Length: 239
Image 1: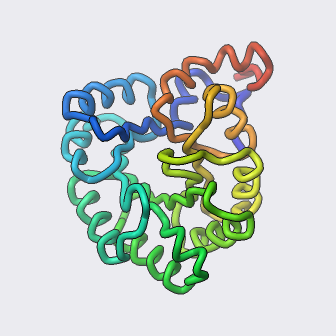
Image 2: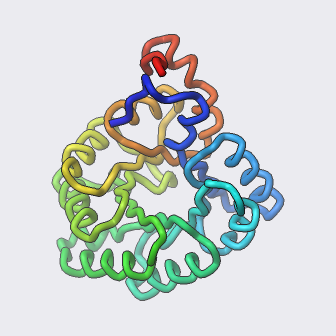
């Protein structure tokens, strides 16, 4: 769990991925928002496919902001081979972190061996890149969330991510369930789909044990840190 008493305003950016996913995104927007990502010291700049990867890699070269490509967006119903190809291509083009979408229907059909093999294929295809798997928990029961998190951890995937951000986001209870399921594993929890009011909700998710938030509103949320400290949602910085 994050100890906010030791986190400065500059450091808090590393608990956020800056996600730019709209259909109308253009190269001009991507380049401009990459600069915003660097300014706010976020962990990664995330986009919805490998198409923008070379441009993002170019803009972020020489920084410690990761290049984050989406895999299987937004439904996750591509075949394992297609997702693996997407992952390999994105890494070849410069991606350093991948956000893959789980096939929710396959999980509901209890095709656990199939899902586990897909997860392993994805992990192998990603190579040295950081890996995430997206559940879209609003479509899942609590038991399905637990099962998915266990499969993700067993496959050695670095992060279990609550949502694509394209649908309803998670409840606090769902995030707590993910955190509890993944404790004592090497897999961490990322939250996306943060509801309004986003600053309050985002920091509550981090206080609940999530270690990363993916959102288009990362700058606004980071800027609100001192306000959150003033009203007691986040503890004061003690150095």
